[in-house]
Length: 443
Figure (cartoon, rainbow, N blue to C red):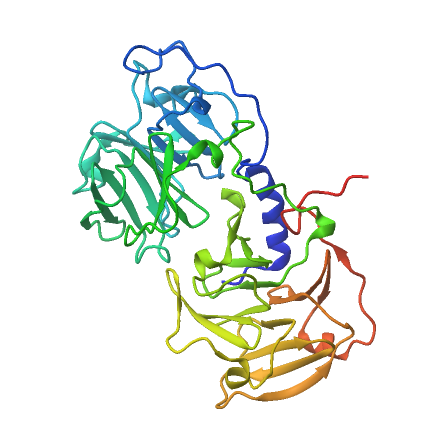
């Protein structure tokens, strides 16, 4: 399904309130009183900035994040701890601690977006902080083949895992549970630390251990990059000394996109310099990641990106990279290839876009827009038209029409032919926090 650009604008506005505050400053609170074994006393609020090991982490159906420790929890990336049973009343008291938790992902089922919380050999199901009928129940009733006294759990939607699944962790064993068939595959990821909690955030998977985390691949368990990393620098506000140095957000007047696209699975991305931003996951916040994290063969920035059927085309200089849009983007064999060989156009280009249910890609160079038939062999330019712009930065065609980006502004057209026939530009719209994750200009 294609997500309209105007709908994405609303999503981005909501994302601002959920974005992880890794760059913001806050004072570190006094450490809570601890007993000789290192456990928090019930009457003392734990402080996650002192470096603690979470028992479980999960978002709710609105995208609020809960971090559990003992009989306390934190709601969001900042703020003080509160008793878990002040929100999830049926969890009870008596120093009970949560073993694992996750948010269900099964869009065609009544349990979609329910929070599942595991304690000992029981599982609780909540929606809108209200417990579902029949809960708690034994873990084996709901998740046959999954052991009790778990260490961690995390959802893995189809497209990121092969099927809608849940990953359960106990010791160095991982249990991949297929939600539809209720079958279990046990894996031994001995290279991964024993996870005391696990967390899915913006298509990335994190194993938390001690006060650190390690990012891993949800299918293979592969760890790439330098890990472990201190969770206090990324997933909570802990003041000076705990920023990972990402810097502040751009001001909206400084935004300059390189490309925008939505793939066949409805995943929408904006590309800026050497980073990308996921646009359609507004409930879970927003963050800029290196392009090479999802598209490993791409170094630095891109010139243009468009999606067609099950493929994403990334144009950089005179080369085109074609990725299969599966659970994870996979570069097609034999690529990159020269842009001239693939689309009949010499690079570099300024922008490229294809419209839903159409077989034409529109490639823009300066004031010229070239139309290439994607089902023809060989692919050659079938039409060449002028547009009323000397140069644009990025282009997108979706259910709302054509959107052209030039610096901190964008222009809207109903269909590509109107763009080509227009002699006068329409009124521009300013990029704002509702259009892109950026800071409003101060005057």
